Length: 77
Image 1 (tube, rainbow, N blue to C red):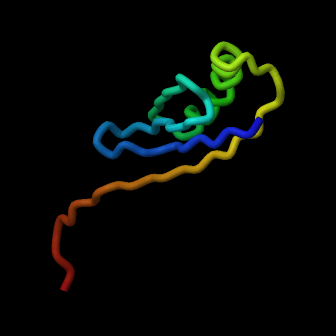
Image 2: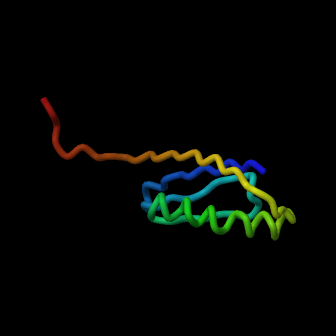
């Protein structure tokens, strides 16, 4: 099974969160990118078993996006 998981940054709450159509019911978040990857690795197999009766190998494609707004504090001339 191949699962695509988007890892997105929320600039307002300073957290990473997941979006995926491939793992029904999975919605995770973390302040750390690496911790979120680990959560997906641990939780996705259980979610696929519970929601899809799937018990095989899983190949993850992780796609990350980090957008942030920076306010200029002084002008450069």
